[in-house]
Image 1 (cartoon, rainbow, N blue to C red):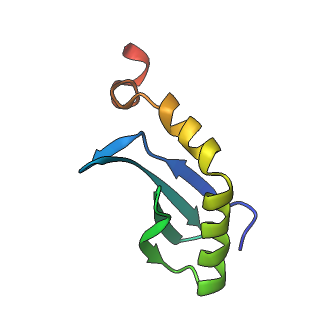
Image 2: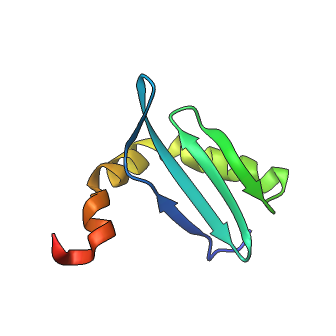
Length: 84
């Protein structure tokens, strides 16, 4: 896996009775999306099984930090730029 992998975190969303966060990893044309809190692979395009295992381990180990990042995201501010 490339050391330049990019990670994007969604804002906190609601699904049925619980809160969810989506984490997107991108690396040289490959992408994978993981849903928290269940650490479920939503999509995978190009990452092999070992790489997915590493991404899942990372998300599990950094779950608290990822939630902290998601809580800081204001979707309307991101959509409107710095105008809010």
